[in-house]
Each structure stands twice: as C-alpha cells, then as structure tokens.
Length: 337
Image 1: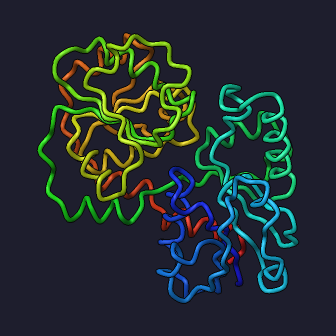
Image 2 (image 1 turned 120 degrees about the vertical axis):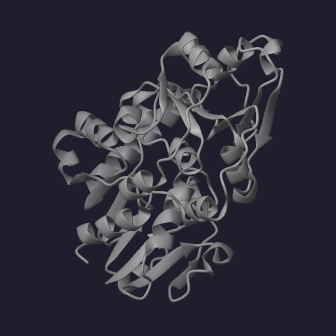
C-alpha cells in the first residue's frame, strides 16, 4: 500500500511526539511511504520518500499546502490531528487527541477562533474515513458532539517514544532530588494555577521546574509573587535534558482539568518517578492500576505533595499496555493493510 503521512508536526510537543512514535514503529519496507515535512527531521527514515513542506500545519498556508501529486501517487493519507489540509482527494485517516476546543472554552482565543476550530473539527469528522482516538474518553466526546459521525472512531492508545524507552533501559535509576516537575504545553486547561498555588504553601526547599514553552506562562494567573519562590521556568528542553529531569524528580505533577490522554505521567512511570495527577476521567482510564496519586483541588494537591513518594517499578506493565508499535499496527489494520 502507498501511504502519505503529514509529518509537519515533528518537533512540536504533544502531537509531534505522537507522530514520531508512530513513524519510529513503522516497517518502512512493508509499505511505500511518502513523508511530508522538513527533510532535516525526516532523513533518518530510510526507504521512505520525503516530500518537502516546511509550512506550519496550524497556519492558513499549512491548510492549503498539501502536495497535490500525492493524490496520484498514494492510496491513503494519515493526518495525526484533526486539521485535514484542503486539496486531498485520498481516503483520510485522522488522529483525534481531544476536543478541548469544544469542552474548554478558555483554550480558544475568542468567538471567531472557536467558530473556526469547531468548523475544522466537524470537517474532520465528516471528511475522514476513520478516526483514531487516543482514549475511550476522547471517543466518548466525539460521540457526544457528533452522534452517528462518531461511528468511524476507534480507540487507539498512545505509546512511549523510542528515546524514552532507550533512556530507561540504559540508565540506572536516578538518585532523587528535592524537585517536582511539570511537563507540557502551558494552556488554561493544564491546571498550572492550582499547581503554583499549592506549591506556594508547601514550604521548605523543594524546587518546582515547569518545563514547556515559556511564552505567556503567567497569563491569567492571579497569584502572589511568593508563589514563584523556588520555581524555575525552563522553557522547552531537549530529550537529553528532559528525561534526566523527569528521572531525578521525586514527583511529576500533571494538574490538568482536561486531557485527551496525558503522556508525561506515562513517561515518568517508565523512568521511575511517581506521577501526581488530577482526578479526571481520562487519567482514571489511562492510569488504572498503575502507581499514580490522584488529587482534587488545591488542598488535595498540597496533601499529595507533602507525602513521601512511593517506589515505582512498573516498566514492563507500562510497555505491555502502551506501545507505539501496537498503535501503528492498529492504524494500518484500519487502513486495510
């Protein structure tokens, strides 16, 4: 089968890591692949055809830049998001990560932005032949908003990237530092206000490292300046910096009020660090039976932060439950390969 894949998300957090995980798990000799994106990010995938496109997939230009020649060369296209470029005449297989734009109004920039995103989400639901949902929660939200259109949705969990697995297998358990880490995009639904408020009341010499894009970190956070004592805003880190930071932390905290999957706690478990996560349905689904600590509200998070972390030794269980190889195989099965 001849398959095109939109790889322009590589290098971006979240969807970029999912895209990389799928690509790394494909047998590039079993099918013929056309990878769309920046050659510098794709040259390592030997055996695949590289179709250069450095446009931002989130931009207007990116929505209209699909290489038209692929309509004649390929049998299908995989889009790792709901943003399906215009001009595609092939069967489209999309990945739905979440419906935060519909469920959490604060994730959009106003009425016009919400209207555009709602329109593009509905277009994805109509245009895609099948849609891979990263959790049962995301599939349920598709069913809630789109009814019969959601019959084309199926659950297909994320996995762990090869870089994280390799690091876990080649490094001894790290000596724990008196540090807490948050990893992720800084958006309103990520719960940073709750984390900073709870941390301000923790006291002591524990450090909090907030790892992610630094711009607009504090937008909308009405907190006293004392909240930022012993807090480091790192900006984005490379894997070589990020993975040791997670491994030596005593906790990774993800205080989101909404997620489609929530990958950083899974990476923390593999690296021997206990996650503290908000008590929301998707985390109960994804982390069922794994050694995570759930909390509700600022008081609950403060109580969790004051506990001594439990030892984490669940690598094999995590790898057996969440695998990008299985994710990629499921995608290909739905494509009819």
